[in-house]
Image (cartoon, rainbow, N blue to C red; front, side, top):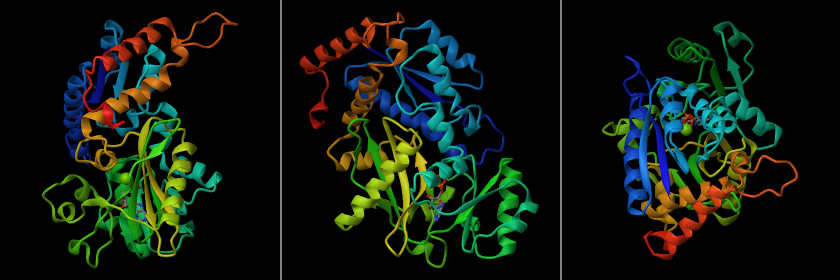
Length: 373
Ligand SMILES: Nc1ncnc2c1ncn2[C@@H]1O[C@H](COP(=O)(O)OP(=O)(O)O)[C@@H](O)[C@H]1O
Ligand SMILES: [Mg+2]
């Protein structure tokens, strides 16, 4: 059984990249997952994706692969390329892990994602999209507000100055987003309160792993309690050291509402397989969805893997589970179905054999860690 692990290799693609650390991280994740899957008996080859579609299409057309593990978060240093990767894989007829192009695209078009949440009555902070500074004159949202790039993730473009309490700092923050990222700014109500993460795994059923939250320490006294880019990626910065992710304990009823809200948000965007939904808990006990991450960080030290470990799924078992979840779903992938009309839906022969072989592997006990499932 052959897995191709696809990741972006664009940490040095731009001279000045405000998201460089985030882009470099995916290469470490690829190495960790390759090791874990290798131990589990899979044959894994890693494909680093450059800026051209040929970087994906040519090597994948030339080899036999049973599943693509798609870790690509950007192409050529641009997060907007993320959604093109699953689209290409669909065209190639290759089964892959994680969400499809539509869900990835929506998650990275934060205003569109939020419109969907609003349509489904999933609580998310009120917001406006600002394309030009002049549009700020019509803004009818009360302070405090937070200003973020509307088409980035991984906290790219978010720092203490992103949280604003007056017209002048609002204008400065919007100007910075427009100039630096050449994309609209998302202005939304700032929700003070705890920041809680819900990691979701599987499709049917979809399970919420144990919740985690950010513990904001003394470094944040008198400053906005936010996971800025520094707090997330600059590991030696005081903000990063003083904002660890820790297990989150909530009263049972509130925990239930948090998980329900996360599931509804994940579903609204059509996400699948795995991902993380980030929420803030306002003082009146309402969970607000602030970010949906279908392509979340799968590093062993990042939130998703830690939540999995808290559920008894150590990293190597998690890696195998991610493959299983994708295979369970792609068993009926359209590209694997017979093309003639009138036949019952069934997985193509190659895929059935592939699943049988996996069974054999299991029976031979070549996959340590599976017991944790
Ligand atoms: N509406 C909000 N209220 C409070 N904090 C927020 C809000 N939006 C974002 N943040 C803070 O900013 C961080 C990054 O914002 P997020 O929307 O998650 O962007 P990204 O997709 O880049 O990760 C969050 O982890 C949170 O700490
Ligand atoms: Mg986020």
